[in-house]
Length: 416
Ligand code: UD1
Image (cartoon, rainbow, N blue to C red; front, side, top):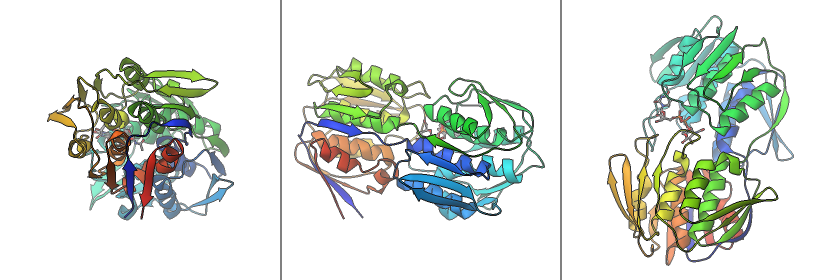
């Protein structure tokens, strides 16, 4: 298994280009199941999760071609109604195929994803919504089977603004009869990007990005070309990389308007962030102030940035506090940061971080995607050498992060 080795202490300087958003691409890939016409996606990141989703779609009957760094999707013959366990267990987002399959075939059989490193992550909100659209749901032998004669639009209020449930239900509703209203919908930028893609194909989705999404069902969708939004979590991770090393970097192709809650916190800790000619400039400050961070659904502070900002707070002089409200087990990075000399006390859903003068390099283990990023950030500033194993987590969601960091002046390498 590959490892990443970092020798800390280099200030980052220069330019970095942000890739397309992983979490926006995944549902959009799935949404190509909704049409027989050709769809082209631009700005797709080169990531393991994207390849896994392509494998799921190929198993269902899509033909996917790479053309000049872009992806072209087309259905090939009759679609299968099923996503098998060996694919679903490697990536929970595969459960998003339920919406389109139900809409197109009236039937979907998908393996239940089960738990993962950061929490239980059930799909009850997805299933409640499909029932409201007229599907019968049965759970048997590890699979959930949904059947309907015809999906019919309805009004529903989600128990929690789940990102995946909002996406899944939106995709089902675009081909349902009549009008669907999703209240308490997730408002993440990735939801807006999916709605934009669906509308490009001829769907009638309005209100994406607000609490209430309205979808008027149409008979069929056509094809189209869509450029995926930049990855806001990759952007945020590079902002913290600049800050933690006291560096000064220019981020290209990022969207500051998707990161308001993070930017507010980073500015409060003393980091200068500004926009110039469409780029984001991040100037790390040597004197950081402590923070109080509570993760919330968008537009609140993203849970996907909690681990990285915690690494930053490990070396601020005062105490900081992090409260995780989205996932029940998202402090796996704490034990590894402690191995590097961080002082962190866990109490229920909160972590009290007592700033230390310095972190020291150590062999550590990545436990999930964003935890891996937090360890890389800690390694960039730690004294000596940090060796991170199990970095396959990292390859799921960060495109060539070690190459991008090396270009900014970090002493980092991947070894086989
Ligand atoms: C998406 C993101 C992930 C991010 C998360 C929260 C993708 C591929 N992944 O995950 O990176 O961390 O949003 O911003 O876009 N829940 C239920 N029942 C459900 C659905 C969700 O209880 O039916 C709970 C989950 O267990 C979790 C919370 O709701 O505690 C948020 O989950 P959700 O918003 O659905 O996250 P994902 O779509 O899985």
